Length: 342
Image 1 (cartoon, rainbow, N blue to C red):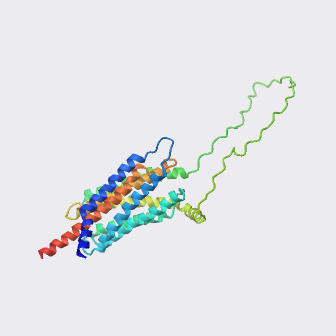
Image 2 (cartoon, one colour):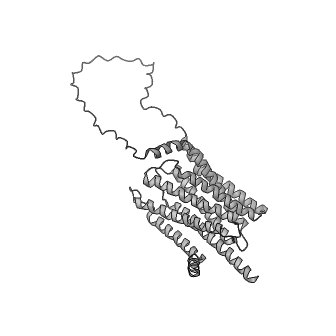
Image 3 (tube, helix red, strand yellow):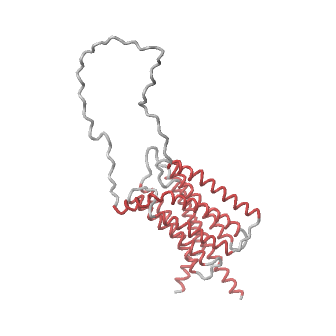
């Protein structure tokens, strides 16, 4: 039994986990760099979309398991509830990504709102709550320059969200102005020059040209939607909530970047600061990827998921995993050292 435990601990050592997460992030970056740009006039192949979902889901599932391992350990210094919330946030994103992948790849549909958005929004709530508890546990007292930094990040993130997401989405939802019809009547003739009547000329009779019937396939018929009835019903029910969901995404992104900045300021020094720097970097990567995704949806016509900036989602999960592994190693090693000294 002891041999199995020691072998498992060596397999889950901090060096192994950090190297595995780093290698996964590098592999994902190379994959996106090589295959994210399709050939001219072609779309990305189906295997590319499947692979991107696998890369994301494996990263978030692994990060969730490592965070929940910290929650189960009574030796964690930063608090078990913090890691429970962060682990559930990673797991919620994993479930939401599975639902979105089924909707996009399985059903071949791209609606504005899917059931997966519920889990994505829950991810923001859980991550923000967990990072807030981590900050409160430090009894943070910011200096005036640090408050200026946090306020600047808040104002900058709000401005970016407005100009990149909210303003384009409002423009798409506005009613276009009425255009002047091409068959407008000509202006009336000037009254200064009276019209001169021309003598009538008899035109020779012309036989009417035969009128050909338009082919039946002149107007392309819309392809029938072969999706299940329950999926269509869910889309119709969720469609009116698109603007509300978008607003929640924007608020969640702004909250994440502010919390990440506060984490960097709160855990800048000290023995346990390294793991929380990775957590803050993970939140920033998540913010970058999600802000790009929202920008692309409302600014790029016929946008397909899997563009290069979306690799930051995978970076975020890998950084969360590294932060969790470092926190577990520092906490357990600190307790072992103190027990040995006692």
